[in-house]
Image (cartoon, rainbow over all chains, first blue to last red):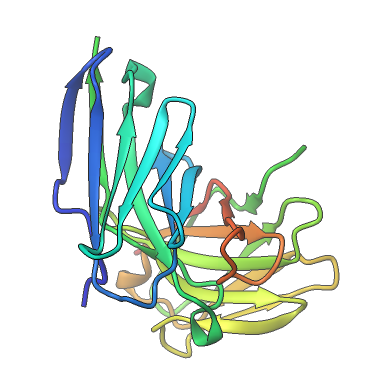
Length: 115
Length: 116
């Protein structure tokens, strides 16, 4: 049962354009969402997060949007740069109890930004 | 400041053997979580430890165990290794128990385990 899904395995974007990465979730108990970037042979690097009480969070070139009614979030990167090429993971966590400490990840989306 | 560190970087074992992986959290972080990432998938939660106690456990067999030490470092142990245990094992640390809205987990570089 895949509770967090990233339906696009890959995305190719031209440098300077917008990259939009999407993520859907099914568990309504999730209340905190994160995006991580991962380069080969490295661990995931935290990018940006959003709590369920917000619908938008912005940090420099990165903006995350949350649509709770649709159980959907997206990461916008503007402008995209070749150094952004990596695997992007969406992750979600619950409100506590047995879900403490557990991040549930999507399968990842490979972003390639062409010069 | 040093990030999360893990050792060893790579490890090759044979089926039936036992392995111990080590993790040191970011200074000041009291919570450590372990994840398994197989090729082509996202990381899967194995354990979380906070203040030396297990606080969360994923859907992994009893061959997997872990502990946290007084200095908040942690070990992941896997007994009776199977071919399917080949994966990248990631450790993440956070300031406190997960589940709180501002409690972001920061990952180490991982240990690549190959079981032959």
